[in-house]
Length: 229
Image (cartoon, rainbow, N blue to C red; front, side):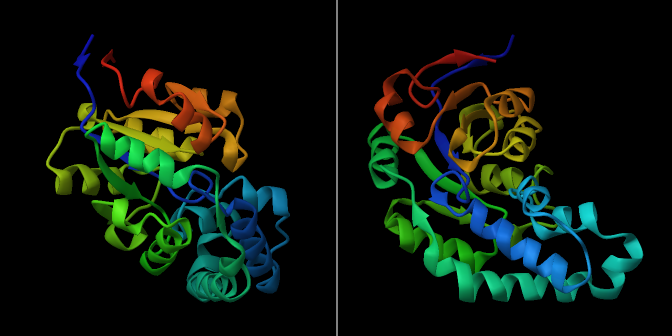
């Protein structure tokens, strides 16, 4: 077994983890799919939230359809989300409290999100946590989004640490799968709508209902204790 010491960094997802935005993203994707002639239900779109467009679109479009209008569809989705749904995004309870507790414990804080850079910046403002972040990364920083490990590789490189020295916090199986590929332990949260069983099957080592629960149980969480992996 590989010995793990106290973590040096907490790497947070945003959508569905710190902010209540998953349904809004699903609506924007569903509307975009329907506009371009693809009969995709809300539930189907929602099941893919947590991936970037590079991974989500191929689930519903053939290779020929992607070449024909994939980029246009993604751009339409982005504009639709920003104008109609971004103003409705709100943070979950206790998000600033949790991040301040993480910093108080001596951990560095980073964001690893499949969202676009401008969306990430807006999310941090909405949650009032911009000043608490040491590092933010987005889909603009990588070639492939989650469940590929690229975003976590970028974060680890910029922080100058190894995967075993970090803990990821995310709401989707795609977060846990991506983090696991670079030996990062994952805390799963249920506030994004994925089930506990799906998160555990993807490799999440610990589960909480949401940020407020993780804040309340911080002392006994992966963020605050030595562990073996």
